[in-house]
Length: 521
Image (cartoon, rainbow, N blue to C red; front, side, top):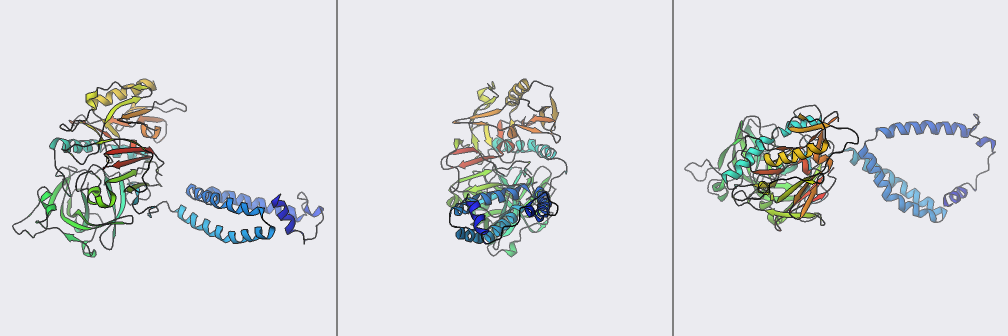
């Protein structure tokens, strides 16, 4: 009624036209012409609307949903105030929608929503400067990435077997090109932009530097930074680096060499500089400034270690972040979206299920958890307890790792899980890349859920974390595998495909890991 009253108020001073003129079916009627014109405009709008990206639509809808209730509430007031309210609102709404649409049209907003929150990008996503090795489907890209898992498992197993101690830049073991997610950071003063690989099982940090032989075109320039310093052989950090090249002159720069990925190596200078993460600045951050690269497996813009060792980001910035961080990995299929890395206690989820974080003194960087069992559907897989039990002496147990693509269990554990899964899907089995349990994906087909049982917490994996579909969608595969047969591995690894669209919270002071469902896109 308020709208009718408003219409009546606006038309009081107008003469009443004849009814014949307002007959829309009359071709001579102005209203008929106006109606036809409206239909044409409507079709044009519908065509334009269909071309608007989904992200733009979502932002427009949210903006309208926020402001509409207020202006509708003004309808109950007197007619002049109604006109005034909408007159004032129109320009505001117009420019708000323009700004919102502009933001929504950019899928790579590198501004963070908090002081200590960074966008977390899949390395082959739209917002990453890197490009996939193949232009085929995302399934083929995942298969290609998963093919590097055996080397990753070898690296992790060697870390446990060798009982290596942590060092500021590297543990002395072979590091691998497992670059799945990257963060946008700035190094130096003024900050120089780098996309560094995120790795929760390493402590070290390193970047390619200007003048480097064999490095990519994007390098860090120490000469352009007013806060850069190279560390000499007398520093305590240099004494922790394995095999430093220190001549008789103690004031010489601390140099070291590392093999990488089996076919690559690099030399670097141990250095200090300011590291900027979102709005946080960490002064005197220790990292390796790479001088020479041999081979083609080095991640082009460096690595940022988030391990729990004494020289990782979490330890070097302990006064700022208090040993707390979390991440949410976007799905591999979310080409246009990013996840997030939250550093510090602020903004972390409060109501979250947790499980104790275990510590291995022989490999302090790894995040061990106590996996007590695995269910397939409603069946608890008959896994021998000793295959899951944490053992700090042998390194056996289960870790959560960001660098492995698909979850890997030791061979006897995986065999039990796989056989029960095959039994429940009841159909012919095929293979695809690293996946040995593939089946025909039909509409309405029942796929058993997989539940990971931890101390104090059960994690029922969503379907996107359990199976991977072929590019055509006609075939689905169990997205898990066994540790490679040529690796004497005692580790079970919860990998990043099983962590996607989950908020994984690492709380070191309270020795716990939390997991909560979250749409990371």
